[in-house]
Image 1 (cartoon, rainbow, N blue to C red):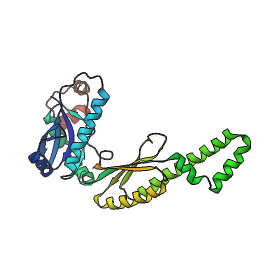
Image 2 (cartoon, rainbow, N blue to C red):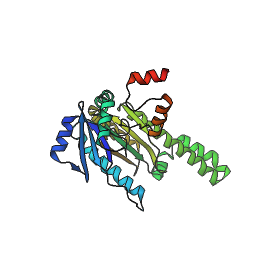
Image 3 (cartoon, one colour):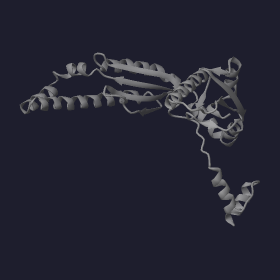
Image 4 (cartoon, rainbow, N blue to C red):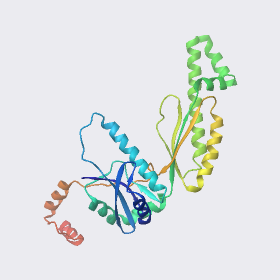
Length: 273
């Protein structure tokens, strides 16, 4: 049975999770500890045929997210790239031993940070009502009217697109100084003004709340400002595994005329030869 790497954390955090319960959100967890780090794994069932593979993948992502939230509530956590599969627990041990220093540094830097997703959608008709008497809007529509209603409508549409971009940049400008980092995600739908993921330290959450209150006042009518989080820093820091194809390793051995039991010096000598 393969295992899915969920996250890297510290042994004391893993011990707390393990002592309370080893099943979170329907996922049974196991733990591999070495060199002051713990890999948290989930047992994965054998792959089976399904009519809705995308739905199954999405369900797995949501389950893993609940596990990460539970771990983050206890202590520092470094998420794994979604869907990272290992052959067995020994591969998790190999990961820790090979990259312990880098993993500890990443855990120290990102382990206690949290990400928030900010989604702003606007009420188009209400926005038109809010800006229709503005001098630049009145002038643009008046200039286009002699060309017909279609031209006037296009002029208003262009103004609305500009207003949407202005609001998007305003939201980005107000949130950027608060977070350690910020990502602009694709806008979802015609009414979406901004879709941002913000990385915060614990001390910055109050500033985020204040900024969201100010931004809410900029959006008229039934415009909405949604904040999803706090979540572990999934979008900014994740453990990834780069595997080398075994066939390439065998080809390299044949090229160098070396066997399976190797030292760094023997590989270096064979390469130089």
